[in-house]
Length: 301
Image (cartoon, rainbow, N blue to C red; front, side, top):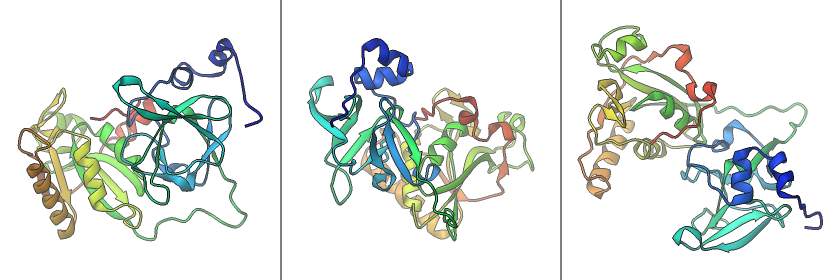
């Protein structure tokens, strides 16, 4: 590019946040599922720019859900990305950088969707999204129908954030399900006297994301082999459970569980319950979007 941007190290430090500086100027990598821009639906139509120099890099119509935990694109804007062989960390990869300022963005892999077959795996902290102005008289199209799914996979704060990041998920809320007490409070559930599980109820557009894909996210983001426990959190409220809403969801969940058990992926048998949906009791408001409200990253699983 003819407008190549060159700054001193001091100027870059002043221009960027510490995390942006670490990633763009020192080839850093943010943890998976801990950055933004993993949910296209939350940002709409527009372009993703380099946070270092504001050069447009990717358009939203080339973005897809790779399940990797980082924003993924199958094609950059022409001339906006440079590539160099990266042999760090004991592996050989193709690093991608901003062609204007040389900032490290991520890597490109040959496992993407058609038409390119490429997956540009980009650090969210290296990007800034700019929405396309709406055409007068138009408005975003809402899905005509949505379906519901309910999952328990440990502490519901991280589970909610994980599902909210999936394209096709229209809404998600945390709450309690599977117990004996009506209108339970968080204190009631933590006593383990009610048998409720902490769950996330998901509204999704089946034209965009299928139930099988939601199951994949569910399995990938917790340990389904530990009874009544996820990491340091223990108690029956943290049990692994799928509450199905129809016979098709029941079939899909049981089949996925069977295949996963047979795959040898886990050393211990899967203990996930697959049970009919019961009354969902929405949790207290301060639990809704908790990580987002607190400005905390989602590092579930």
